[in-house]
Length: 343
Image (cartoon, rainbow, N blue to C red):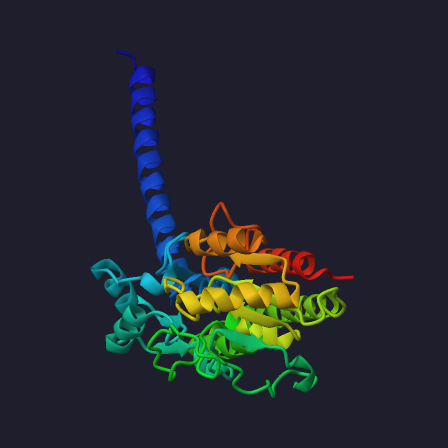
């Protein structure tokens, strides 16, 4: 073998070794960088979709969000698994709505997580029965002074099926009122900034952008439902998820089963709804995407009414009429406008 060939072999081997070492170092650096990137992010566990949406919109690229409720799963029924308990323990923050998911409340309460953000504490809550709303004109410009408790279940002999909420039986569906949801967003933004001051500017900017979108949504609902053919603006839903929305925009929600989506209505309640629908000119019975539509369709068939979807946005699935909270809320607005004969 010639000297030149030996030199070439040595050079090739050296080059190969150097390449391997270089790639190993590069991989190590990439791995370190990835670990560092993950360490730089605020790790947030969100209880169900409306909380996930807030966390992602406000946190942006600086937050890693893990949802506890799978898309399509009814959030009220969630039971926390051992894996999810471990996720909670390893998280920097938990964002949840106390009173909606008992197993989540218990798991977060028992965890050693440093930042616990209860959305229910960031806005005012009210008690709602089967019938809610109709008094929006009494609210002030910003809606901070809602007409107080409008639940008439006890007065009218209806059966209330509400959950045993830690908030004294108060309605947890605050996210379906864009104004209340914006109040919660502002509170979440402040909590993120406190937990992760390094990215405070980003959280403040993202919170402001989200609040602006929610105020735009509020304006659209206010204008879109102002003038309707239905003078009493009554609509029927499967369960009483839309009480805050009804109060905000001068509507009256009549729920078949109260606050519990799995509840069964009494025979008296069904007869009351049939009489009321005829008297008030109700055209539509609304059902949901995550709960059986059997009761709503039976009532509609018996009373000669139409059916349509009014989504409480407890999760986004393929059946959802939109890809996120804002889109589905706009679909809800369109459905209400159609049912109430918006002019």
